Image 1: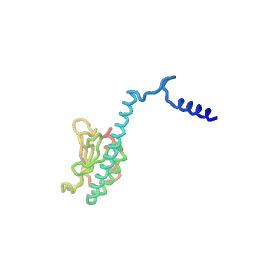
Image 2 (image 1 turned 60 degrees about the vertical axis):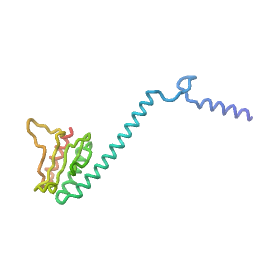
Image 3 (image 1 turned 90 degrees about the vertical axis):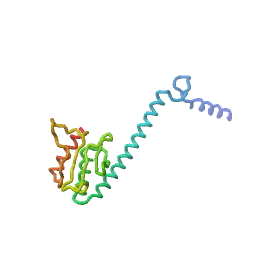
Image 4 (image 1 turned 135 degrees about the vertical axis):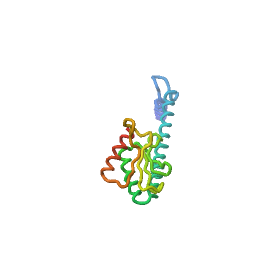
Length: 164
């Protein structure tokens, strides 16, 4: 009876070997498979870095907004929500100490409080990477004294167009 158990055990061990074709044992991954795994690992690392940078950027933007005086602080919070909802692909970051939103690392739009340069109004602006071109002349910065539903709708539309 002992002999039957050991024969069964050996048969199980033999069948546990992985095979790629009948009678051939596997020698591991092919060069193509290794290259694909390496590429995927790099993608995952890049994704993790991007997520960390986005989270760090958002923290910096929220801190910059929190440091503003009213009414700019309230406008900054609201703009942050509008931009995130209108263009989720944009990454928040600070730009010259101002809340800004970037695509592929390049700033698309920003908010500058009135206190930043001691002006009478806050500014919401777009950089040259924004897709807002209309003929030979188009606005790229707007004076902002308050946010009403009208301004919010216009800003949302401009942000969507800027990243299109």
